[in-house]
Amino acid sequence: MKSHTKYLWFNTKKRREYINITGEVEEAVRESGIREGMVLVSAMHITAGVYVNDAEPGIIQDIDEMLEQIAPYGKPYRHHQTGEDNGDAHLKSILVHHQVIVPVTNGKLDLGPWQQVYYAEFDGQRRKRVIIKVMGD
Amino acid sequence: MKSHTKYLWFNTKKRREYINITGEVEEAVRESGIREGMVLVSAMHITAGVYVNDAEPGIIQDIDEMLEQIAPYGKPYRHHQTGEDNGDAHLKSILVHHQVIVPVTNGKLDLGPWQQVYYAEFDGQRRKRVIIKVMGD
Amino acid sequence: MKSHTKYLWFNTKKRREYINITGEVEEAVRESGIREGMVLVSAMHITAGVYVNDAEPGIIQDIDEMLEQIAPYGKPYRHHQTGEDNGDAHLKSILVHHQVIVPVTNGKLDLGPWQQVYYAEFDGQRRKRVIIKVMGD
Image (cartoon, rainbow over all chains, first blue to last red; front, side, top):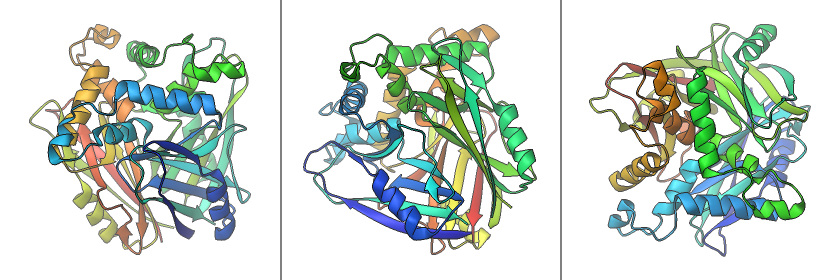
């Protein structure tokens, strides 16, 4: 089994941002030379997520609104007794999940027609990291 | 590392359906000849999910009702400004997650006593696809 | 590809408990001798979850409260017509997801600074199991 690991860094302007990273994942697969296998794309922070969905601005806002409805920013979470103010971001990360696996077939991401890989930042304006690990042959 | 890839096609009669695909996943593992490794089972559309849970009709309805409560069909989602009417299906896909990994041990799915693999269709009545990729030795 | 499989058993005192299993996952990687690859950590029951987040008691309570708000214990779920009383635990398992993949780099879990692996028991006081499968080279 071959493997290739790289890290993406983010430092968003806004507290919450949704960033299409499909191109970076494709590039990691190309660099790896792997033809058959998979790529793990996983947030390395507990206030961010990674998901696969549509590159359509309306649905991105719908996702954000659903998460705000379930776990609103500014609610007095117990976590805030530590001095933090990002309890909502932890909960949003749990709901969205912090990672995806993208299958690799014939050297390419084996995604459906509308599937794009997104980094979901829920507590930005600081340096955060995602790991991309390609594994296969 | 060996790998074996196949695709399942669905075209459900109803808008939302929950289909037990454990048999198909088992068959893919048998075909692969892989004894140790894992199977990725992943929806290739952004309005469907894949999950592991119980083959009990009541809990399937409970799952459906929970998802409808959080992201109801027919709400005026921003995504609908594109002409689509399936914003709820995108949100349900995010909540359920679109993929699972099933471990393979001694050539068999290493699932617990009640674990079954389900395809969750949230915007059916059209051709949709799932990828099954077995990886291991 | 090498692989190493082990099972963790739990029998919690309370109905719902959140248990940090990062040490057990690290130990499995050490035992495997694998330097590059990943570890699948997956609940084998349909009323439990596995997630990656913070080892901070406040946020654990916040997660529990969010799940109780969406899928409260004691609601008359359809699943209860079978005689069971754990419909909430199935739904919580769906929301949290039942598994994570932890990347392994240079023989170590490649986690971010605050990432810890948690077993989330939603219907405890009985013997339950988690599979840990390390795969790589």
